[in-house]
Image: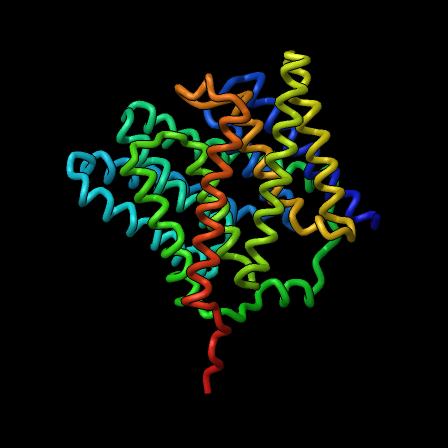
Length: 336
């Protein structure tokens, strides 16, 4: 493995485990979300610039408060409420595809999905979420920046930056396709009265990962299913080990081990390498949500969480394949 790859894996394992561990010790709300944010930051080739992170933090604060206020006002009117949720999802994809990136898109979808859902259950808990999503983002950003300082990355070349900024897809078509996938799931989730907050977070993350992928159709579906199955398997194994050794050091060591292992897998040349990054976030959500749950989900076991997340993943991915058959993605037409 190249030296830079070794550094990248070390940054990921130490940084994510650090956020995960402090969340367990201090017991702050949504610590799992903070660990996932850290994983997304640390899988990037370079640290997020301070100015860009500041804008992202301010954006998350403003978005969560606006979502809370709008949801609170319109929660007594179910039809209008659902229409606003659908509009919020579509605007989130527009924001992401316009060049904002995956993480801002995930935050926007969290505001469109998680806050309204929790407002219907408890406005007090929703207000906790409004404060703690930006705070988790802030802490994850601080830890990831610290890790890039302690374990520096190689400077990106001009060719890498140019390749990363190139887009060859039709943004309008992509927005429509992903909206047709995510909006029906959200409507079914809200109408059924479901309250699994981490499942909504998982759907927000999965939808943005699908939206960001350059390829389309069954290739993406196979890769994402593989990633989620791998992450689910890791989380079940970790949960069973946790049952055998129920001390706080166990989940910390397990988190470090699976981040290190999956991170190294992602830098290898084996077929599963492409699924490793998504598998880390899936394992954090499923396993982390079982050992450090939010609000009234304290009795949700890992197997139940796997079933919840798996159902959401199959729905979103199968819907993605179906929509792709009728609305295949095309490259943007070159302007004359």
